Image (cartoon, rainbow, N blue to C red; front, side, top):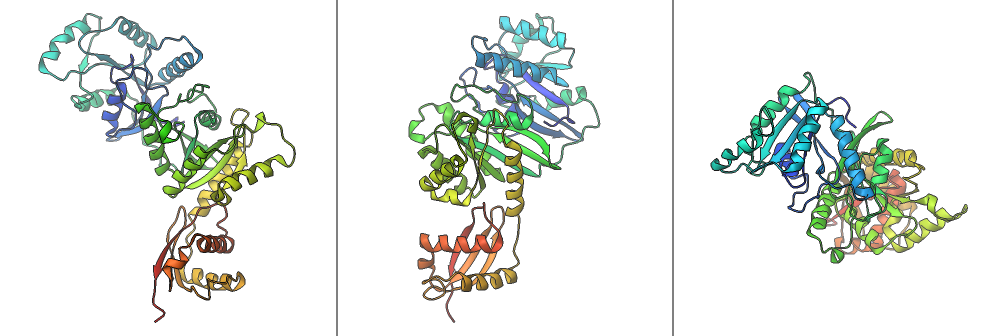
Length: 439
């Protein structure tokens, strides 16, 4: 977690507009917003820089969650821990009048001795300001009226907020690598993020769909600043009947897009499913470097051949898995999670490699003489190649017969040659095929 920056927590009841305010402050839709109560279940963090002042802003679940089950209790525990770690608090109330639970929140803020701003949201019309007397009756000294939806008084809120924070805070450096954690519901994504973080950063539950937002967490490992992104479980679109799940899936896809490496968790007790193949296709669609982590490895019976047999089953069901690193782990028992991180760093470093065009073409010429193919080099000729992108590597090939070279079997052959020649094992590589006259 980013320890050096002061933390500001937005707290309040469910559905008072905390996530809308969070999005208004950061200037983009990051937290999911909906009229459904209890939508936010995890603490969401975003670094904010205002002038020379930097801080972490957190969107928290509603504190009026009734602790009737284990999930609710975990949500409340994590939220209260977040408040206790805060340098300042924004307590958000809702027009037109305080609810009974708001009095408990005001007392919570007073007892915390943490500097706080008490704001009343949904003050969209001039006549709404008459309702402020309802809130002053709570014994509050100063109240800030605002509208998170129309961004009214947001600049004033930030001005007051920065005056409460410790000075000389500077923004953290950008992460060296971004790693998202994706998979089906209940594959262990949040458990893995907590294992990496070293504490209960996000709520873990057997209830599918517990995680709804994409959750960021920064750690330092082997001298690198790593930003992890925990995501909602992805199901097949035809099985989704809840609009909130569509929001979650959109956040997951966005998390994949802003990642350098994607850890795809596969449940060892279930195996690779059709949904897992769809998830891997989504990773490759956005041209990201994947690692398949077979989670819950502690929960299955095994011998010295089990892992290799499991990998072969995955590769049989999904031929592209041959291109990926596959590691067995247990997020719950923290089994091989260091190896998983080391592999992610190694893959990212390898993906950054750029091969000089002259070196690339000399190596290709030697490689195709060594790896003979009845079509490539005879009917289909590759005249020239150049690398056009990194992370993952992308090459442009100039040929006399673009249509034939685009055949799946020929591209797979070229991929194999490139991976062996340039040590690109574990990476997906992509090709652009262009025609070129023999003249």
